[in-house]
Each structure stands twice: as C-alpha cells, then as structure tokens.
Amino acid sequence: MRELPDQALAPGLTARVELTVTDADTAQAVGSGDVPVLGTPRVLALAEAATVAATARHLPSGSTTVGTRVELEHLAATPVGRTVAAQARLTEVDRRRLVFEVDVTDGGQTVAEGRVERVVVDRLRFMQRAGGAA
Image 1: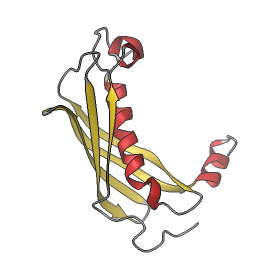
Image 2 (image 1 turned 45 degrees about the vertical axis):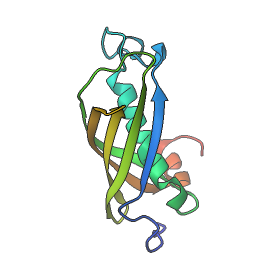
Image 3 (image 1 turned 90 degrees about the vertical axis):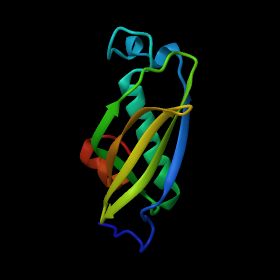
Image 4 (image 1 turned 60 degrees about the horizontal axis):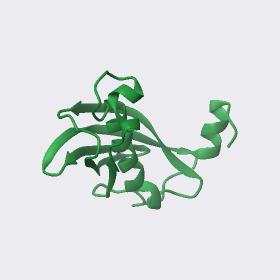
C-alpha cells in the first residue's frame, strides 16, 4: 500500500461547488419524494462533489477517495431555478481517513449541513477488488 506524502492532505483544505436546480434534480425526478424541489440525494451528491474537489489536487498519483460515511441534515426546500452552493472543509486527517464538514446554502439560507468521511485508496487496486475495469 502506498503511503501518503507528508502534508499532502491537511486540515483546512476547502472547495465550493454550485448547482442550479433543474427538474432533473427534484425529489420527484430522483425518486426521493413527490415534490418538485431539490431532492436530498442531489444535495448529498453536491456535498460529496465539494469534498472531492477539496482534495483532488493534493492526492498522490494513482490515488482517489471514496465515501464511507455521511451525516446530513436537509433543512430547507429549494425550488427549481435557484442556485445552491456546497462548501466542504477538511477538518481531520487520520492516516487514509478524511473527515469533512459540509454546508449547502441558497443565498444566505442554510439548506443542509453535515459531515462526510472519505478514505484515500489506490484507484487501480480499488477497481480490481470491486471487480471492475480500471
């Protein structure tokens, strides 16, 4: 197993990603409800995208991260046409385990908040173990 270089990943790394909500992002469209507002699975995907972006340039060659745990509170509805932003901040590095605090906002309103954990893995080895092509 490849070791992470010293200080490759350190608490404090951040990233922000945005999504303008479309009909395809609604709870109706993703099967998580029957209302035409931003669905929780899309909120989670946006939060995870921010965690990936926060570390992407800091990973060793051939490495990636995979999600292992999520705690997310979806606090407010967001209608189609609004733009939400997910901000992720790396708060803890424990060997290969990375912990992020995430916030999703619509203007000044908090839409969701929580915590995402990811693990650094060797991409090729991970895909081989998963039974897929690299």
